[in-house]
Structures are given as C-alpha cells and as structure tokens.
Image (cartoon, rainbow, N blue to C red):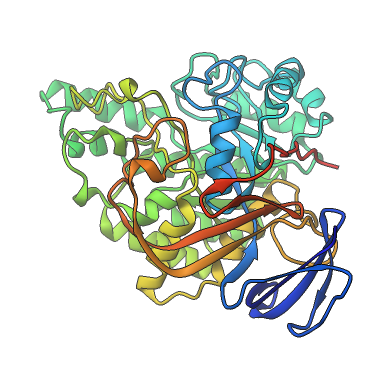
Length: 451
C-alpha cells in the first residue's frame, strides 16, 4: 500500500517546511506540496509534528554474537527504533568472535537474522596481525574498519601501533573505505596512571580517573593519524572526540584537504566533569567526560563544522561490571548506555542554546550516512531514498526513568535527566515499527551492504 506522509514541519534537505511525500515499495517516490491530494495513497497527516529522516548511528556496540547478555540485536535495535534511529552500525570488538575476518562476519550475519527492529551494518576490525584479512573483508560489503590505538578492554581485539596501521592502510589504499580510530595512545595514560598509583590516589574519585586519561593521549594519537592520512590518502575517521585540545590540529588538517572526519558523542555534549559524583561509575567512558569549558568548545566546533557528526557510542555491560558497590573507576567497565536517548538529549541541549532543529538532520543522519556509504539510501528525505523517518514532538518534556529505556540493562547516567522532545513514531522502509510506546509488527531490519 502506498502512504502519503504530511506535516507542516517536514525536515527536508532544504530545512523544515510544509510538505507531503509519497511512500511506495519501501522508498520515497515523490516529494510534494503540503496540500497535494494523492487519492491512491493512504494519508497520514501529522499536523504540526516534526517529520524527520531516520537517524543513522554509526557507533553502537551490539555485542552479539557471544555477549548477548550484555546487549543483543533484539534489544539494541528496539532501543534504536524508540529513539528515531532507523540504521545503526555495529562496532566489531565486543562480540565473540570479533569481526576481524569474513568468517566472523558471517557468524554475526547469522545472529542478526529475524531480530533487528532497525536496519544495520557492521564495521570490520583492524587489529594487530590481521592485515592480510582486510582485502576479503573489503569485498564483503562492509562500510569500513575500526581500530584502537590503546588497549580496547577486549583481549581478542588487539590494539595497533604505527607499524600495524601502516600495514593496514597499505591494504586499504584505493578502496575508499574509512578507517575509524579510537584515538588515544598508551604512553600518556600509562605515565599518568603510574603517577597516580604512586601517590596513593583515591580511585573512587572521578578526578582521579579523569587525570588518568589526559588530553595528551588523544592529541598524540590524532597527530599520528593526521600524518598517516596525508601519507596514504585514505579516509580516517576520529571516533568519540572528547578533548577540545585536538581541534586546532584537526582544523589545520582539514584545511589542507586531508580526508579526515570527526565525531563526538551525545555524552560529551551533555555531561561535564565537574558534575560527576565520586563513585558513580555509570559515567565511566574512554576518553573520559571532560570539563564544562571543554564541552562548550566541542559545541562550538560542532556548530562551525570542525566536528561532523554526533553518535552514541552505546557501550553497555551487565550492571555488575560497573562495580557500583566499590565505586572504583579503575575497576569498572567503561561505556555509557544511551541508545535511543541521543535525539532528545541533543535537542534539549540545542534548545537551551537557541540552535534550530534543522541541524539534527546533518549531525545525526546525513553525515553518518555518508561515513557508512549509505548516502542515497539513508539519512535524508528525498525521492529514491528508503522511507525511514520518525515523528517527533519537539515541545514534550519528560524525565528519564529505567522504564523509559529499551536496551537490555537499565543502568545509565541519563536516568533522572529532564529532557525535551519525544519520538512518537518511527517508520522503517515505509512501515511503522514503533508507535505510541509500542513496537509494531515483527522485526524487519536488514543488513545494509555496501554496493
């Protein structure tokens, strides 16, 4: 059945405007004037609610296969759909086996069957010693690769040094696929941690953890990646930028035309180090949450285009791994559970700063879709694209409770946050999958394979 979607506030490529669009065979077939009557289609008139392109989250840890007790396709994609995310891209490290060769990729594809409420893809992994596996992964249809320049927390996903990076980038040269990098190096972290332990620092204090992951670890890693981007002419993407101290390096590199893109995460734009209670390890992530002044510098960089996009880095774990009873930051698993919350979190912060809703489409849909080779299919409302969209009430206010969370474990630093804006419906390829707090139909998400 064809659907006609109408609102006085459709987030088109040209901005918010009255519009109607026609959905046929899972795609948008036509963008029309608001008052166009399409007699052959079922009309869905959303009044003055915002209709926006489905969000694309390129930094999600689904953890299945192998660690579905942490998170899985069923729960992760439900949480995504409830937050307006219609496509997510899984990180390759927290599953077992890690997605570092084609055989592991096939295991993941089997695990996702008939479970996903959103469309999905997965990054491949670059680890110490797997350079020869990269060409096969390249032709398998994945959108790119992820690496760590420091221990990832997962022994089976070994971090890489400059030698490993050179081997990998030589294999990737000419493919056009991006290399995503967790940009911290071990030297400054090891030195800071040793000094803190020697001084008898209290690991229940957030200031101790913050001091253990200094800005220099990010800055040194990014400087190395910039040099390699210039040498190999291969796209490099900096994931979860936390420090504003690296912005001058990145701005200079991009001014030279180097193929570098940058993301930050909703939590770096929302929380600030000064506000984090000691022992509250649900706030632990790496790189760490930094100062309020640093947060404002990240907002300025997002507004001026120095940062391209916003993701979640949803990285959950069983609650026991957060070690809340001990409250020790050095022992707790690092990762913030947030899938489904990024849209209202970001919109709340934007509204406070007087930033128009239109920027959401670029930061959370269009730019991530380009990174994952999904432009033309995802990330915008235009003829020929998949009919992925959500209906949003930008004025609704609510408080996050565990009952509002759809991911597997309900431990999140956002619990108690007072937010603005709610997703009322989410449509995936022309059919509703989430409506009025309920999931509709059956899981119908598909893997998005690079053409």
